[in-house]
Image (cartoon, rainbow, N blue to C red; front, side):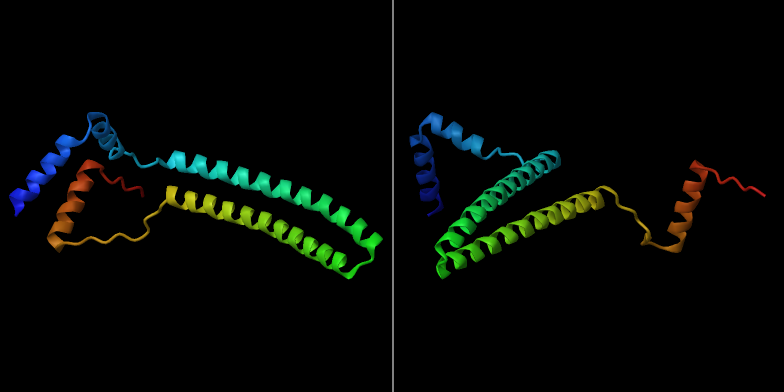
Length: 148
């Protein structure tokens, strides 16, 4: 059964065009993005989203003023209902802008935490004699100066 499977795979490989084989090999060589690339992409996306939300807020302000005039002229309850909905959506967009800022701050703080790491507690796993030997070797490399 295994020989049959290998024969089938070989015949399939022989029937694949060369240019398609090359593309298949290249697709397996994808590299993981670097930290710098991820940071630049994140900043780019943040700026894009921020600009879009600001434009939408500006557009909604204009639409609200137009709807306000229309509702005042028409004096129809539905027009006032639509105006209220538009005002609510505009306030939600302002909240989204603030949430975007909070998310960016969290990402920046997370990045800073990953860059600086301090080890407060270290654990030595071994026997007492191994620990003494390690301490003796390290003290020979950098002698301790006693100041009195």
